[in-house]
Image (cartoon, rainbow, N blue to C red; front, top):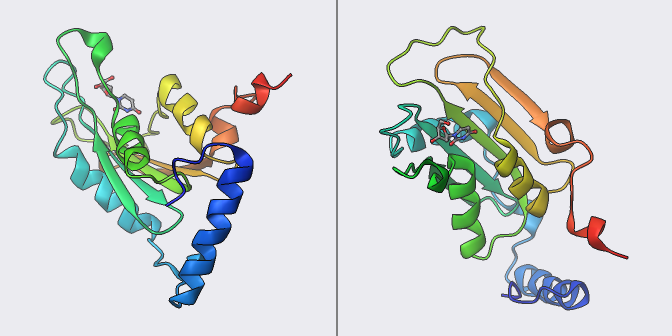
Length: 174
Ligand code: THU
């Protein structure tokens, strides 16, 4: 409901209507189930199993947590024409947006070279630049990114740390 209203005022009006309906049936947004960081990472790890990465042999899985508690999983999907590859993060975002989810809380991303043991002290690399830009489109400064190389340590950062001075729709206003 309301997700086809992209004009800010209309969006606000539709959101207010959603709140009214949710509270009428006894459901506040704040009462939606919470998903722990560990559970989100486990879902990202499970999503790695779906990776189609015959070229890089670098499977990646992502689990994207929406503000309402829904979780969307994604994996990297490669292509013989390499530039047509889609990262795990964008797969998860595009599935969520298709479903009408526009409020995001966090994403967990797990990846690493297939078959290579990862040491706990290994620092994971962050999401690629294109995925950072997709996050910037849909997420606020409190959006959290949990990163883990399969079996290694977990690093958590917020979006502005990944993409300082990011380009947004506000940047385009005259
Ligand atoms: N990849 C992701 O899916 N997410 C990232 O954060 C970094 C890279 C994918 C793209 C490609 O399929 C493989 O990992 C190696 O670059």
